[in-house]
Image (cartoon, rainbow, N blue to C red; front, side):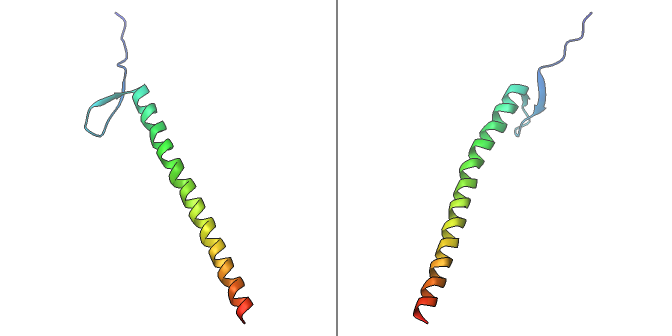
Length: 63
């Protein structure tokens, strides 16, 4: 008699077993959701830095 492995790899948030493919798919969705957040933070940091530079230039010009 041959032993067959179950196709389940882990348990999801609701306690429902997930297939390996489903887990990988969820990981890729999470990564896709995180990418825009990272890009948004980069843009905000760049804009903040540029604003600080402009404030410094303006102060220098006015003194």
